[in-house]
Image (cartoon, rainbow, N blue to C red; front, side, top):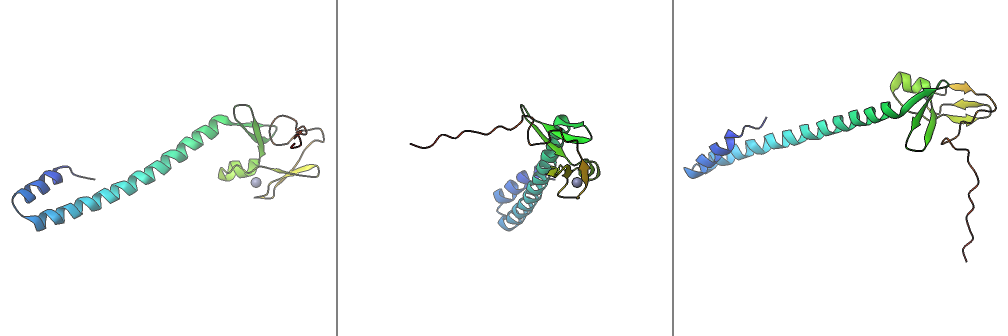
Length: 133
Ligand SMILES: [Zn+2]
C-alpha cells in the first residue's frame, strides 16, 4: 500500500538538502507504485473474468440436454454438457453422422434425425453472390 505521507517526507528531505535520503525514499515509492500497478492489473483480469461469467450465465440456456448461448438474434451451440458442467468450458459439439461429438472430451450424443443442430437458430440457405462486372 502506498502511504501518501512519504511524498511530504520526500519533499521535506529535498527542502533540507538531504538528497541521498530523498532519492532512497523516492525509489521506495517507485517500488510500491510498481507493486500497486501489478495488483491493479491482476484485479482487472479477475473483474473481466467475473463479468464474462455473469454475461455467460445470463445468456446460456439448457435445452434438450445441451447448452445453448443466446445473443441478440442468434442461438449458438449446442455446447457439450459434460465439459460445461465439469470444467465450465463451452465446447461446441460437432456433427458426425447421426450424432454430436465433443472435439475436446470426445463424448458422443445421439440426436434425432429431424433435429436441427446447426450453427445459429435459423436454417441455413444458400447465399447468392452476384458476379463481378
Ligand atoms: Zn466435452
